[in-house]
Image (tube, rainbow, N blue to C red):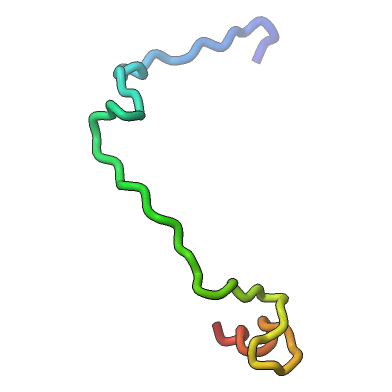
Length: 66
């Protein structure tokens, strides 16, 4: 490729500006917002002590099969 070559994008047949705007007046269906999931007890992390009381990390004990 020579140094004086100018890039010219190829023309295409579709229109990028179709007038669609996302927001309150949006014309197509959007899923309703979901309520966040609330746990009854805090989530047990993989590196937290196992809940069975073995003294091992959860990932090396009861979490190994999960």
